[in-house]
Image (cartoon, rainbow, N blue to C red; front, side, top):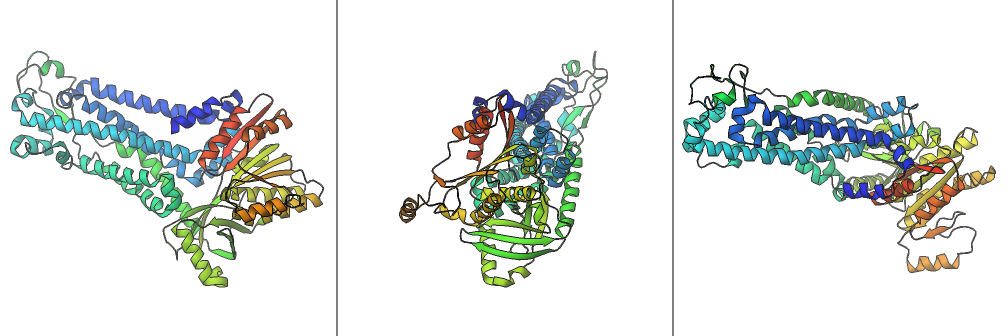
Length: 575
């Protein structure tokens, strides 16, 4: 799927589109080269270095194919926590305001990077585990075959107490064993299988259908990462990987040709062995410390009391919650994590702010009712009625997103799908206030597209659009925001009849707005071409919040229509 997505975007390749995403391409390229370099470097080391000669005689290529992906796992385990340090990313975005937009935009792909690191860990874990099973099969074969085993002088396995006792002194214990059972006789094997189970649970619960419908499962299983890092930290502590420590005075190539425990030319001193010391924890200890500081900051911020000002249930199964909190400073399009201890003490759910900076000190979120947690919230609101404002609620955030850059463009194209319209509520409100206060400096034209699957989705947001539409008309700039609304499906026969009868009315029969609702899906190719034609020599910022399938189409069109005449810079909300 990832390769298919890249192919789709490649078909729409343009130099302008490529330059827009250049920092991200550079980062991913450097990351890939580092992974490849680590794999090749460690593979060559364990395949050719003299100090691993004797162990290679027992494990064959299994040793190299186990240790090379292990280095890649360590590297990506070092990186995987950093993209979810949201305060860190917000700080970098804030201090990087003089950087190019494309550089800041690369930071908005933090969740994509997190997934990329995760799938790399899983892929390399498959290779690493399979190679070790291969190793254990040969260890068992050697232990059961004295002739093969005694060919190696001062065999390295003798220097490992666990394998020595289990495999050499009592071979009767070995013969009935298989590689699976032998794995559970070592710390490395036990912790390795624990990590495998954790990775399996985290990956399967991250599938979109699970994450969207059963967010609680995703939330709980993802916090198993704590046990993953504990297991990774102690994975090597038994030190069962021996290597020759005196290759400078005992050449293994010559020594291996001599009878057992004898010396001779090129082997004046018998080989001695030591165990490789643990190293995995060295890779992730600093990023883990950064993440713990991040969590501490978020915990302290979440302790600040939040006052619920107003709760309103919209007919479209959407709850609006307005709140206040000390030291809360918001920017357009940002998001917060919401926790309600009376529903779940541990669960934190992300929601985009629908308020704007000019609404301070109040801020608001709109929550679509889907899943167990939101259903419990709706039930609580209905039960408590006006007393719902006494509900204890905690907030973590706000955190920055791509929408913060909307005022850096002269032309902005905003696309929201369904409840994905929430960040644009904040943006449109802020645009209205800035225009009213004569503070809208660079942004001169906004195109707003809202794609909805059913008529009920229009209800809460249409009221805001109606207010902005009337205000801009009163101020003499009705064309500042040009919006188009699309209803893709869900209308009944009665609604279709009503639409037909009121087709010539001044107001749209569904939204009650001046702009008429379009029925069906937008023709994005024509829309982008028209905007490019109308704004020659301009750079258009495209901002989207919604499902991945529409994101791919918009990204494709943005790259396709980016030319020297007009370029489109694509930005997607990620949280």
